[in-house]
Image 1 (tube, rainbow, N blue to C red):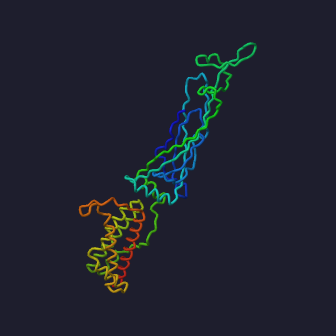
Image 2 (tube, rainbow, N blue to C red):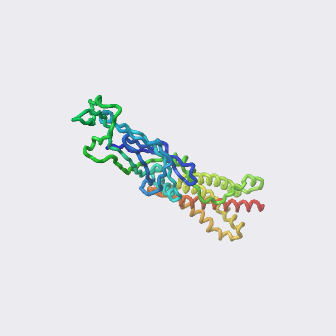
Image 3 (cartoon, rainbow, N blue to C red):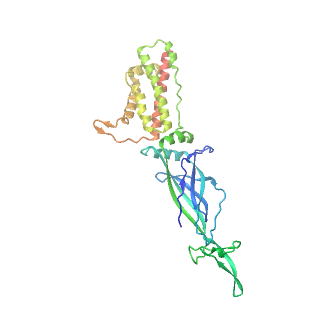
Length: 352
């Protein structure tokens, strides 16, 4: 018995917008011979490393009416196939979404690879339609099966079901088969980032309250050269924060950390003395006691800098693994740092 493989219909994997929970739709097609009923296709979804993610739930099927054909014993034409199409969706909880993202960032192309473990249930009959004609035989009526080349002997108004010829002597009328098939499908990185992430809620994270200061209004104040320099650094830091936020939403964890290096560097070079004085004036701490704060800025820069260089002192560094938790921590710390410095700076300038 020959079976065709089910397949995922091209471009059918899309977010399922009718679900209040994150979910994805997919359509599967299968060709079945005309002497069979395709009862159902069911299954579940796995990650690329065969970890369970979710069950497939059927939404619809086409055709909605399943019909079978019985060919005659005299027919020369073999059974054709009928195409079935099933539409499914599968919900994805937050833990599964996190796992998909983690696996994606271990993929060389940052693609999402999903596996569909399908169970195909098929009911096939073994019957043939036998043409026959009554003829006298020893005073009785006897049914004579027509054969290829002798179908003209049959009465077109009379038919009977007879056992199939594939297994002579077999008592089987119906044969039920169940097959397990695994299909793999790849969602490209660009498609995942543009079509799936926002809809599925990937990139929704704890956000620090950042109220960007109206730095333009400070132009009315008479600023010193150091204050003007620091104001420019704050303006640049807000732009970098916006870029970091975008990278977090896209799931580019390593880029978030690399960009934080550029942000932290704004408050590390040339303005350390100004930062110490500002912290001292707004907290009443002695200036020497603000040293741990500026050292903290330097240590954050050192940490982010480690991910920036692929070659260090003539030695090739490994391809560092950066997780979502690393990116979130880096973004939140960077945002808090900018928030703190901006408000301290505003307090100093407003007091003039």
